[in-house]
Image (cartoon, each protein chain N blue to C red):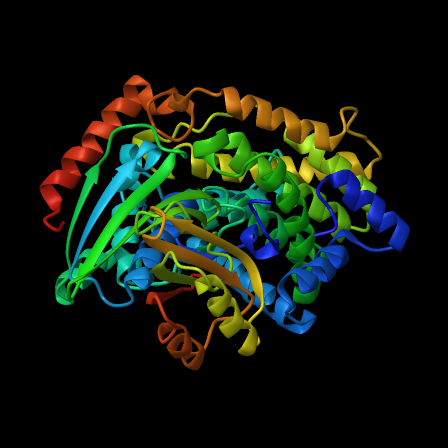
Length: 299
Length: 221
């Protein structure tokens, strides 16, 4: 890859008059030796799975493995259709779709990790709702996923994308940054604006810990995906309006690394702290454990 | 760079609920299975760090067992992996280990079948990506991003040259390569990450080389 940082991306795109997604496809061709058609076809397959997951979560009764969560996507979707959501109709849709994909994930259904399964709702939530809203083609959205991928590639290699290493800021935070930057490009913003969107978004999730109740990708992960999709829309809007990330986005990624490295292990996916260790979190954990030991024989 | 390309960020397609604790675990299990080169009859799995704390809720146990059965990350049989293992006659044990490992999501697997044994130590580094730290007790591993050859051989003059010569004649490009030995003139292992999956003919040629004992192909791409 010719880029290591978001600044590299903005510079190369400016010099060569490329969109971020176009640069990503070129670099992917070089890295894997695969022709462009194959690479784009693989991504198109991934986008189909994202759309299927959005639909599945809204049409079927999803229940997580523990029985703790499920059905919230449908509630939000119906509310967004029937009433007037305070965040606006389309942000309401984005929120519902993000919840939907995350609920499918929690029920051991099929999803695409973007960048992880814990954060798999945000990009489909933003992409699928924006596609409906603006009447975009599938091809355009597939292209947009390469832009999201380029941003994620930089974050992953300069910081982290797993909750066990860097907390939720690394998962949900990265996904919001990726979705925000990609949406700027999809809506006609410049690569530089897209890069600012990433920094604006990430600043709002710095320090977010990973504290899943009973260690499950359910509470609070699913709700954070729903809210994350709305955050991504907002960060993209700020950047498209011309707001800049005063601290450059690459430096914000550096801060994510600094915070994650200092984060106690209790707050990095071990379920030994945070929401997982609240009185209710502990009670739910006990209940799930009890249900499990009485209900399973294998192993 | 720990993450190599766009599909290590967007992807993999997988069954939930966790890319690191489910999809990455499937891949680590699959590395052990492929290193052994056949369906294991028994497997011992030891979990460390966050894997040990939260494996049950994420289906990490099901995922590792699914990997040992050669399932891919999106295989919808993963939730039923224990039943599948029983059907295929694979016994397994899963236990938490103690001590500090190089990564918070860490697993150790020993698999056996027909008098052969394979062991793997690996970490799940996020987004379904893995890093293998040790193969059959050698301090050498792979990233799982490329089709990988794991070649056990004796530590002798010229073995590496004969391996690379054979690869070169078959037109296989080497991306990354590592040789590790346990002691001078003792057992050694060479790991080659290449740009495409090696064919049967090449594997046969490698197996016939002097001082080469076992050749496995690890492909979880």
